[in-house]
Image 1 (cartoon, helix red, strand yellow):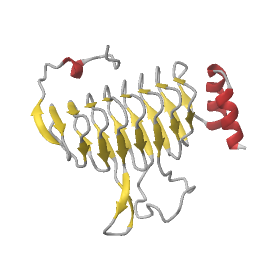
Image 2 (cartoon, rainbow, N blue to C red):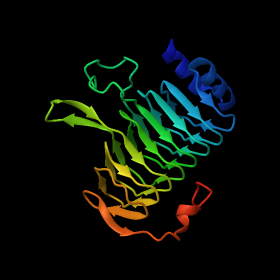
Image 3 (cartoon, one colour):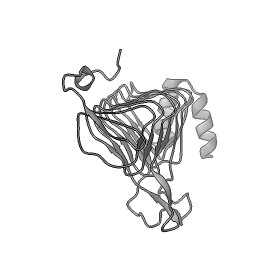
Length: 224
C-alpha cells in the first residue's frame, strides 16, 4: 500500500503532491519548498522556505532529511543510507546504537548534480556551503577489517565551504568552516583550521585563504 501511495504521489502536480506527501507520509514541507520528478522517501523529510530538490534524484533508506531555507539538491543525485527503524539487518551496525541515517543541509547549502551521498551515518553540510561539480562521493560507512564488521562515522562539512568536483570524503572527516576542498581530493580525517585550502590524496592543508574572498561573506546561496 505504501509503495502504491508513493507512485501515486509522484504522478500528481506539485501543489497536490505537496499536500499528499504531508498527509500520507507526514513530511513537513514549506509552501514555497519544491520537489521535482524525484523519488525522495526518507522516513522523515523537512524542507524550509525555498528549499528545493530537482529532477531524477533518488533518496531512500534514510531516517531523515532536513533542509534549511533555500537549501538545494540538484539533478541526478543518489542519496542512500541504512535506516535505524529496524527494516535492515539487525547485525549491521548493532554496535552503534546512537547512529542515525540523516542528511542535514543548512541554510542556502547546495549540492549540485550527479553526486553520491551515503548517509548511513549523519552527513551535515553547513550554511552557505556548496558541493560543486559532479561525481563526488561522501561515504559514511565502510568495512572495519580489524573487527570484521560494518562500521560508520559521521561527516561534517562546515559553514561557507566549497567542495570541488569529483572528490571522495570518508566517514569521520571534517572540512572546517570557511575552507575549500580541491577537486579530486580525498578527505579522510577531521581538520580544524579554518580559512584553508585542502587538497591532495589524502587531503592536507595547502595554503591559507584570504579573508577578503567574497564567496565567504555572501548572503545569497546561489553564485552568479
